[in-house]
Image 1: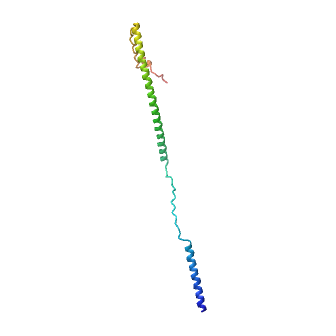
Image 2: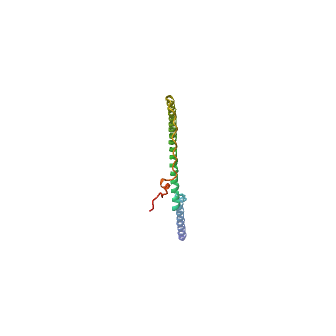
Length: 136
């Protein structure tokens, strides 16, 4: 009987150990998995040629913007110049009419405009048969 009691005691200890091991794993619970998605971007590999092309494109964009601004400014300036020229033309027309009335009143005859001078086609040195540049 003592052997039965010993076997029963050993069996009870084994059952207690198994139960203890069982509960120790179940106490921790189910393992949870966490999914991490890091957003790490690696810059693309760029050659020197690509960098040079990009710099050239930026330079051309700046140049085009500068040209556009200047052309707008020039256009505005030209409008002002045209207004000034029309004003001068109107004043000259009025002055010409006034002078014509004064000449008519005093009986001054109109003179012919001076003859136009024809520009020379050749340089003076080449007309005399000389070379335009002295020899070295």
